[in-house]
Image (cartoon, rainbow, N blue to C red; front, side):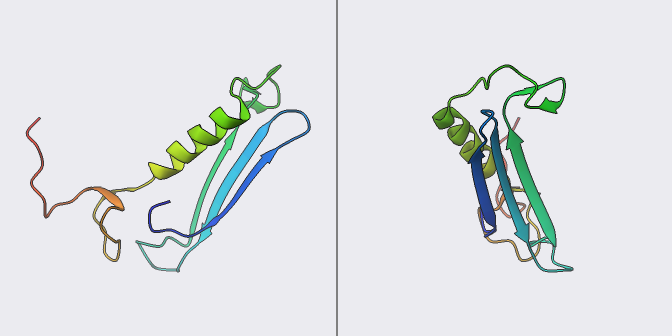
Length: 99
């Protein structure tokens, strides 16, 4: 999660649902370390209901790989005050490639 150090929970429930959560309690008033930042992912979702699908479409390993990929992609869109290098996609100090 870039420069954020939060708490992570990875659970496979008895009904086969993968219940993955990550949360950070940051610093009030800080842009680089928001007061609250949360992410969650569930499998066996159908019609926007967790556990409604007959089976998870991902194995345990695939679900963990997807979760890790999602978390590693969470960055600021642009450079913000107090954020370390690498925690944002667009650095105004670096030239951007032409479209």
